Amino acid sequence: MSEDAKHNPTVAQEPPADGDAAAPVATVASDVLGAFFDELEKSEDFKETGSKMRALVLGEGIMAEPAVRAVLFPEAL
Image (cartoon, rainbow, N blue to C red; front, side, top):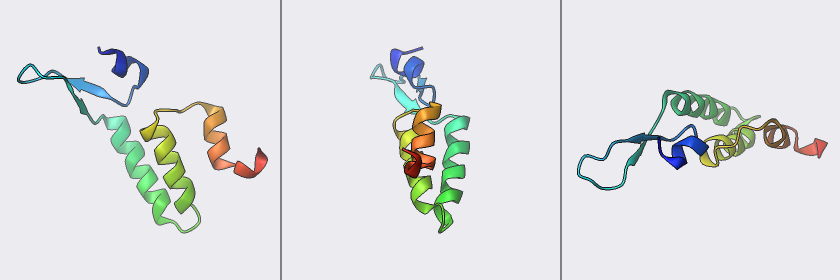
């Protein structure tokens, strides 16, 4: 397992076919979360929250409770 995959569980590594660097492969978890965030973004009430959650979880790979709470409840900060 590559160092990147160890630190970012949503990134899997596929063995290179031609000796080049490994290419990231989507995982089931990232597909499920992506579909969930798609549905949130379709809702008028959660459009902005869904976008921020997608960036946090799928973009940055952060699922820590304090970071998620900050996105879900920004007025509580």
